Image (cartoon, rainbow, N blue to C red; front, side, top):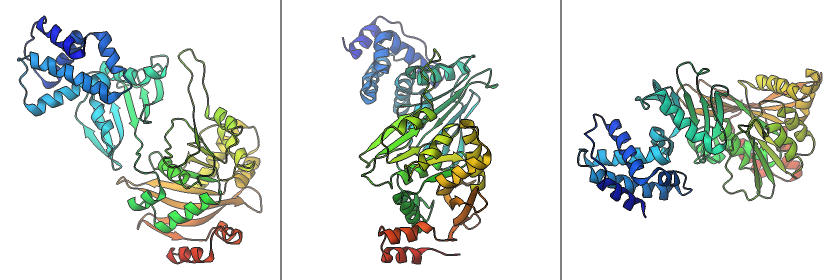
Length: 441
């Protein structure tokens, strides 16, 4: 029996209800009617279908049948369509958040209990009207996200990180840790930005700077992208990764798989995993970095170093895996060096001086990413990393960014340009053309 036949048969035997007092109450009532008439098993089958478009079409037929059979619902055509979409979103989507998830211009969604919610577009936060009636509705939504992943959230484990099928990162926190009700944050990652050329088009950096970064990646410089939360580190890392020659094997390692390689033929993607409900099966970033060294990588790309895996990443850069890339949280290049030193000490008990020596020998450059108050993101300074005469890390500023004028200046030409000339990777004409386009200090 089809879904439509189930709905029509049940409609003939179901008493009609009185008119709802609000649009949301009507939507909830229609959803209950649809579930009662179609059957919970059949509704569960639709909700769990792999083909989301087909599931939505199948459910739309059933919901329309419920509305057609109930003349107590008085809505115009626009409200009727909105009502149908709301019910479908509740069953096969993420309820009132589904529209925001489908909007490519929205980059982040923040639910602060049932009291308030916000979304980010173009780097600017906008408030939303009250979207949830109570905390229980948010908890149900969180469970819908994490249950298919074998994860749980309760008073004993009130914090969870997960990933949607689209690759969006999800963080949820519930009471007693979240004092004012369940908190849900969804970070979206745009598929539209995947190359340095697109970042140039957005004004995040000038063309000559993009050419310099492309050259650094091609010449197998070990690079770290540093910046604050939401500054565009992952986007820049993705763009840099796409500059890797297509004849090289790339192994990516991430907490939540976000990097996109549309045109590269040889990419191996690894994703960390937290422990299951039974407390077993955890796979850390450090486990994956160690394992990646056995996978014959030409390049290792670590989405972000934030723990003991830092020392393994530095050792990989020092043992024949030149051209590896990573990101970390830091406000300046100096802070990045200090943070790398602290993170490395989580993995190995050595004096800071020795770890700084390791950093100086492993890393070739630090690129800063910055987000301004108006939401604009910029690829700012670029500094070379080398070993100082006294030991430890010496930073050489190649590119400087003026925050007041949003202008870039080439302070010093990186030494790898001359190396590329000597090796024949770049021609003298190419280098001269690039030099003529750079605003020197």
